[in-house]
Image 1 (cartoon, protein in one colour):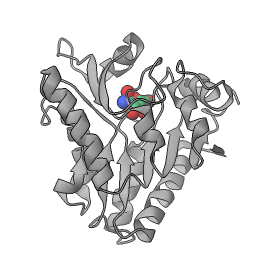
Image 2 (cartoon, helix red, strand yellow):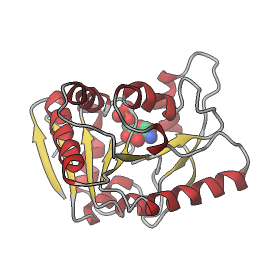
Image 3 (cartoon, helix red, strand yellow):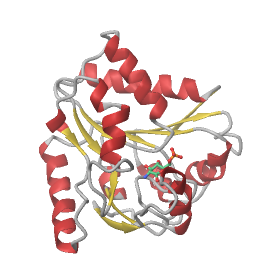
Length: 244
Ligand code: GLP
């Protein structure tokens, strides 16, 4: 695990953008793993700027997002598909059919299980993920792998912890249905990525970052599994690194 501490959140986004562009420019058919949440928004802004200034093209890129809420339509304002369309896909030249986000609108368990299995197959067929971008939850989750997730877990249904539901409440309108379930890549799926880049910014993430980097390998801090990955980079601003 390589830990890089930079002065500001902006520097973290620039560092991550360099890594993404590097993968795209060195692979014939680059496969990116993408994340949602507020942290990677600055990265996506930077990638759009680099696309607009012709420094990178996403024409041959395939992408797989980490997770999606169960039971809301793709077109829902708070779906992770909508998030990705709005923050990245609609502003770059990626082929829409090459952008994968778990299909999780159904509330039927068998349909969701099949969708999870198909997702794993699609990742394999694409040749595996070259670079997986990650954020980290306040409780140390990656994707929606909440504390107690197995390090061997694959794409599956997860119940969100109370603290995650509370943290994501800000995105939903008063009285609006907020999903408590998600379809997420597993920790085992994430660890199979050829390289991983986890971004964390702000003081609120300092405890989770400390547990991930300095704590024991523990299912109670899912991100600590990244200690097992040979090519995991953790890029932090000074606030997120403040307890290291
Ligand atoms: C969500 C996502 C994660 C993300 C985390 C942190 O729950 N499923 O992939 O890393 O929240 O989000 P933020 O960057 O907004 O703090």
